[in-house]
Length: 354
Ligand SMILES: Cc1c2[nH]c(c1CCC(=O)O)Cc1[nH]c(c(CCC(=O)O)c1C)Cc1[nH]c(c(CCC(=O)O)c1C)Cc1[nH]c(c(C)c1CCC(=O)O)C2
Image (tube, rainbow, N blue to C red; front, top):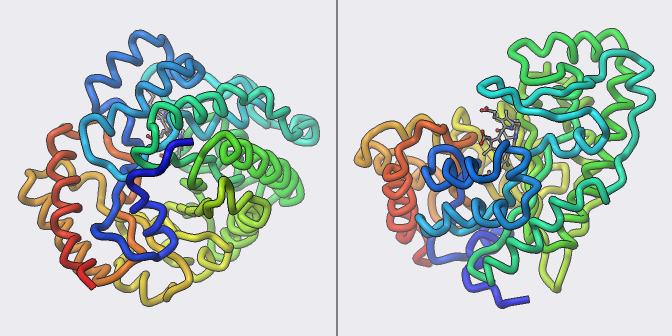
């Protein structure tokens, strides 16, 4: 394997000194880029694109060709795992992800099992191919959905505003939801370990919907399973630590709990004050975040002002990876991202001078 030329992202996750604050953007390869839309057209559906090694590699590298980002993220989706469990993932145009066979009764839930990782070989092939194509430019991030976030889609059958089905299950039949989560946790552990073995140099758990849970329920139905996963992950590969990032959207009230999962870094959404988050987690974990993705609709001067505010809020020293508080919008003007990346690199240098 080639030598890593820019390891600022990995160092920041381990709270080691860097010359600037590294950044990457959630959903950095996606529809806001015209080159992504062109490749997507060639591939056919979004899932065809995920399953095409060559084209998945191409779109992963597209944002890096445009912007000097400090990490790449595997092009795939969190719903590949329930798809491999036999739920039948499809994307209805303009409607988001859906399952042909959602978990709607006890029999379906009891029949659920950890999929054969061979069903997900296309993901691991993409990881190896992207590593080759990166040739040591920046590290590659692997990812998975959290057990609870995956369960939301598996039970609801698609996206939901109310989470009424999964919450009904949680309150009426908690043991059935625990069964789904236990299977998901085992599947996610195997899935992330296979990504690490294929070449992922850091991994992120996307707990996009953990923040929809009540106090106490979050700890029982989301956090506990993420903790189990973190404990089962390969933490060192090829002579380097493989850092783990846990991102619970809406998890700002529970940062101490998240830090106690054993993760290396916490992903923060934009509702959190970085300075306060840093005080709360101390030197236990690094922090990743947390610009409001909608700030990228504003003019470059306003974007730069927000970056300056976040830099001052985190303050001096190591342990910050810049990111958005959630995925980038498909309506973001690509040149606003140019302004963002430049501002983060430029304005962060004074905070790393010692
Ligand atoms: C909840 C969730 C999903 N997928 C994901 C999450 C967790 C993160 C989050 O909270 O946003 C994670 C994800 N999805 C995608 C990535 C790729 C890596 C990256 O660049 O960050 C990652 C990390 C690509 C994608 N995943 C998807 C796209 C758009 C597909 C397309 O039409 O080309 C991309 C680039 C599709 C997808 N997949 C999912 C949704 C809700 C959608 C959007 C549907 C829509 O807007 O029409 C499920």
